Length: 90
Image (cartoon, rainbow, N blue to C red):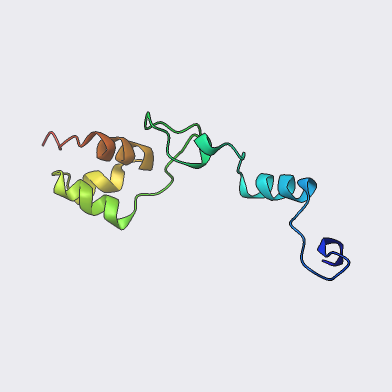
């Protein structure tokens, strides 16, 4: 990165163009509100669960769901149950 060095060969901070590229690559807006947890507890980004983890399975078992019920669940359904803490109706 020869372009990021000064005449006395010290490293210079990235220019605005590089910062913009890095932010888009890292999916950051530079807005502190979106980079940290919001006070209202809601996120500005959508999230879709695509798998039920081992810990999710353990948590569902603790809520009274049996393995056959868990195996039939869609990941998003499991996430909603875990978020609500809803116990198994069985």
